[in-house]
Structures are given as structure tokens and as C-alpha cells.
Image (cartoon, rainbow, N blue to C red; front, side, top):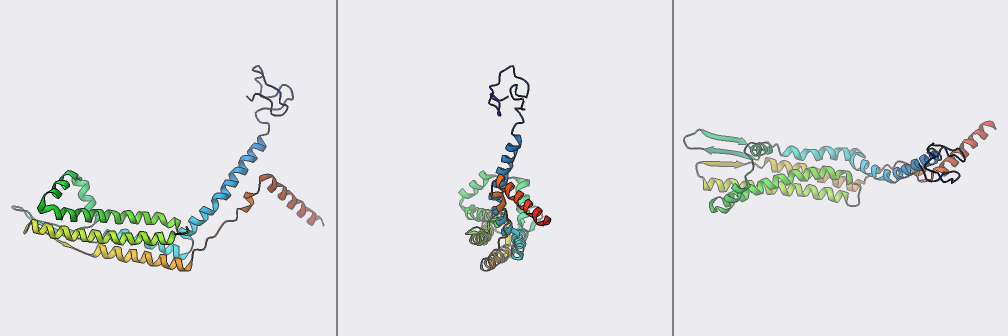
Length: 270
């Protein structure tokens, strides 16, 4: 309970356990609650009015017009390039049948690591061994390039919501360009690995590298770059929701509302 009555400022004692003030009889707990609730509502509406323009910009960036909607569809395509063939691997194991892995994609890579794990010590050992060093450098480049290309795709999808920012379109183009660069790095690493492994294990290991995945990345990310350039030239129209009334204090809004109602009533009576 409050130390003083909020209405008459009577000092409350420990024995004043009832919710009513013993002097003026007002309910100490609920006195002025309407004003407090109005103040809280006014504060919440003001914060909403200040935040609403950010929501409008994000919405316009993501699905503001037809170009933005087309851009979303195009931004989904690069991840499909990871499903394309990156090549094929054939291993002739002595005293066993030929093992042909067939076309390799990100699904095969993920399956390989989930089944056999990722032994970093074995990779460092292979890097320290001169004959297999270049092969595993290429292997590392291929994996890192592929992983970064996928991460770039995820970042690009998230950054679409900030396209209305001052450098939003430039950022989208930069991210797509990085995706192309990482896919090229992955392809070059695959070529290095395939050639080096074939030299180290002649007749046992053979691999062919397919540029399909890299071409898929280049084409899809190129389409993303093109649609962002079109969006930049056309401009992004932001449809702001009118929330100006919530920037006015609650009491003033109520006074204006009452004046408008009184004016309407006078007009109707006239």
C-alpha cells in the first residue's frame, strides 16, 4: 500500500489495511488508474508510430512491388545450383569391384560427413604429406568455397529486407557477386583436387569435374544482380502508413475528437 493517500496526501499507517483511505474514503489502489492506463496507452501508441516507418520500409523492400516479388523468386534459385553435378569420382580398389560414386553435389558432401565424420587431424596430416598436399588444398578450397556460397545465399535472403536502406541495392549486388566468386573458387579447388589425386593414385583414383554447379551459380546470381540493377534504376516506392495521429498526446487527440464530434452534431442539428 502507498505511504500517502494519492488524493488527500493523508499519511497511511500500518493499521490502515483497508484499500480505502480512512480520511477521504477514496480507493488508494485504483485511484487515478484511468489516467495511468491512458498514459501507458499513449506511450505505446507513440512508440508504435515511431517504429511503423521501419516496418513500412522492410515491407516495401521485400514485397513492395512486382520487381521485389520477382527478386525473391530469383534469390531462391542459387541454392538449387548446389544440387547440380559438380563432377563424378571413380575408385578402382584392388581385389574389389570398381567403386563409382557418380555425380557429386552438396547432398553427397553432407552425407559423406554425416556418415564418416570430419577428421581435422587426418586433413592436417594429408596437408603435411608432400604427395597429397595439393590434393587436399584443392579439397579445402572446394569445400570452403561451396560452404561460403551457401552462406552468402542465406545472407542475401536476409539482406533483402534492407533494400530500402541507403546502400541496400549495392549491398545486394555485392553479396551476389561474392556468391559467384565463391562458386568459382569451389570449382577451381575441385579441379586441383581431381588432378592431384589422379597423379598420386594413378589407375586407382579418377575424377571428372563438371562446371554445371558453377554455371548454375553464375547464371542465378547474375539474374539476382540484374534484377537489383533494374530495381535501383526504377526506384523503390515506400508506402508509409499514416500514423501521425499517434504522435499527438492522448489528451490533445481526445480534445480534437470531441471537437470534431461536437462540430458534426452541430452540423447535423443545423
